[in-house]
Image (tube, rainbow, N blue to C red; front, side, top):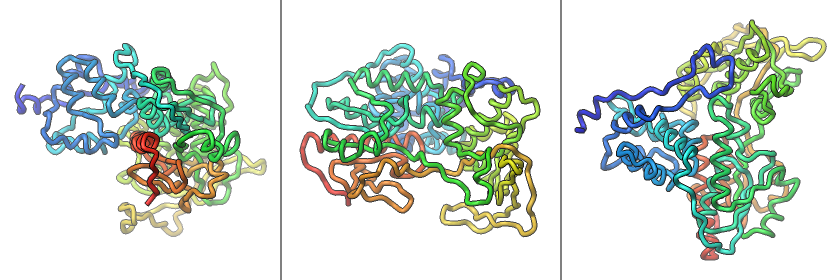
Length: 478
């Protein structure tokens, strides 16, 4: 097939669950590419000599090679090539913002639609979950021990890469289930728990990685105690401490963080109501503050819970102080939320949460905004419009305004340098911190970011930890 013929093939669409039906369930919305469609999409790849798509991937997946193997019908080779760089393709194929990373660099995107790299990644990831054709091989034991704090994307990536080098790896997880934000933070309809557990369980079984759940670092055991027992420690605890607006009324009953809400929905299985009668407080009129991916997840979960609990007149609002054009969430998730009936209140900012004499939320007072000049983030600064206050009647308010690292982890961090925001200072290339034999990566360093960027940080740290364990020389953080 010639280059011109490939460029004429349209981008293949992902089948979706019906927008009206999916409001009533937590089943996966995106259904995956059928085999014939996946092969047709793979045919579109131009196999560029200088593939920009690889530059856009935080872990450097060998994208042209895995797509070439796929379209030649060699799925096992495609999986092998993928797993050279990415240990969790079925996860990343579902939740990575490919449109701003690998697909955003695709040459086809300059004149048309880029290759659906994420959908092809999911296809081969799901194939591997079903067929297990590319197991990881445990090498000879090096006699070195590494502790990984946190079992989210950064921790898992670091643990798997160290396990592949023959080191004995132990993961410490504060909750009762491994996976971190992949399990408690992302809804079932975007990332099924079975996919996460299957990816993680298979990797740790192949490599003999130990996972200790219900271990809160800073309480059950401290970082210094880990450093006494292990040759190296990696912190990948993410950023799980929620941020709240500093406005009156945030202590009323019915105000919660997106972290609390999504954790109850996910870990406490509210998505399987009424089979699990999980104590999730949700009313008929919900306001979600913020418009990032977590806000979309929260709003879409709220709609589904309202339906599963039999509320016929439920409303869910997303309140955002900028305009539609500035929405930070993935376009796909924003579009799905609109399809599912979420009401968006743009150029609107809360100024007070209103409650009754019993302390229950009854509404939220807001003010209209206009956009001024661009701020340091490059987005236009929202400016309040005088005398434009109004009230939205709600009984539940969910704050989805970002997160910070949990300070509990750092109870004995005397020699560990952190920023004013609580994030750990670490070298971007190696993950090395200011404390001896301690590395860090992911959201605990950068603040809230993407799954794949956290995995990239975990992998870079693993490379430096392996060098240190084998050479016995430690470089100081610059």
